[in-house]
Amino acid sequence: MKKIFQPLLLIFIFCTNSTNIFPQREVKETLLAEVDTSTFIRESFIVSPDGKHIAYVIRSEGGLCAVLDGKPENKYDDIMNPLVFSPEGNRLAYIAKLNDEYFAVVDGAKGKHYKRVENFMFSPDGKRTAYVASNDLKQIMVVDEKESKPYDIIYELIFSPDSKRFMYRASLLPYSSVVVDEVEEKQYDYIYSPVFSADSRHYKYMADEGEKKFLIVDGKEINNYDNLDSWNHFSPDGSRLAFVVLQDSSAFVVVDDKEQKKYNGISDLQFSDDSKHLVYLANDVNKSFVVLDGKEGKQYDFIVGTWFSPDGNRLAYPVKSGDKWLVVVDGIEGKSYDDYTAGTLTFSPDGKHFAYLATLSEQFYMIIDGKEEGPYVEVRQIQFSPDGKRMAYIAYANNAFAVIDGKQGENFVNVGNVTFSPDGKHTAYIAVRGNKNFVVADEKWMNEYDEIVIAGGDKIIFDSPESFHYLVVKGTSIYLVEESF
Image (cartoon, rainbow, N blue to C red):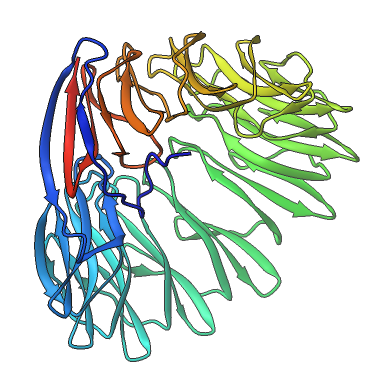
């Protein structure tokens, strides 16, 4: 297979003239960088998450320089991999070395010098920064260039989803504690699994103290139980908490401070996206079953996991019954197959449709709302449009092709992931035929290239319902290509 994109692999390629196979879309090419291959360090090359910027490191007169969109920054003795873009793609950071001292460089500006700097990260909104620095044998947490007190070890750095809060694990051996918003909490023998709630208002983590296991929520121990399992979750809206208690060779769930029925074992505890429902898998002797809002479902030999629809109103799960597999949706069993392909079960964003991949007689079938499409030799990248009205996936028979709304597209050597426009009206993907690559939009293509570079996941990025972009390389020049319908 000709690689469509690898962030750490950049092949210098040549672009042919437009083939004009179909009526042209509007195309704009913007030069991002002219690359000197004799100084370019291939492993350093990265593309921003928005797919519009590039950065890499070059050798420069005994030192190294980071280059952002073709513009070199200051020279240093060394630059540590990886370079880091902020989540929105408009900021670049890296760790550099000069005169045996290390420091973070953010937006081209140097931070304070230390003996060592590591684990640099941006907050989700890209406005804040954090990293661990070392002087002598102690480590310091540096958040927005403000230093913590020294610790023996600092790890698990976590910004809250809204970027306003920050938490990390810190150890003054032999004990550990969690530091939340600069406040150090109680020390324990061991701490693990710190996490903020999705609404950023709450946080929790597990802790061991002697033989006891605690769940700590917002700094307070839930100490009614001596032995807690690792399954514990906030609801997405942050208003509910559920966790599993182990007691006398059995397990039970506590949700909203209420204990549920005991079982031999419990796993896959999760809330629906609307926070109204709680589901988990329970087992009794050699059988497994789903427990939804405290109500037990039918028993099966094995259940892979559970999937809520985005609106929280529907539940689906693949099960094994005897030597056959089937998917249960809304409590209704689907057709039996020889096997179910793990990880393929998905709901549309509006929750009205579902799809998964199954095999029968060594052939793959795409199941959409219970109806079969296929058979195929292989199927991958199943996805619905944002409005939930359309469906696409990549299939293989003798060749590769996209299947969009049940219609098979052109045959190619290989096909990248199909991307829907935000309004779901357009599609775009990268395809390979012979030794050429091109973008297929609404099943029409124009310019052919020897290679196309994108931000990752083999997906084209839409900027609006009517425009999208990607990167190409012509000779030693890297261009941003923007197309519109």
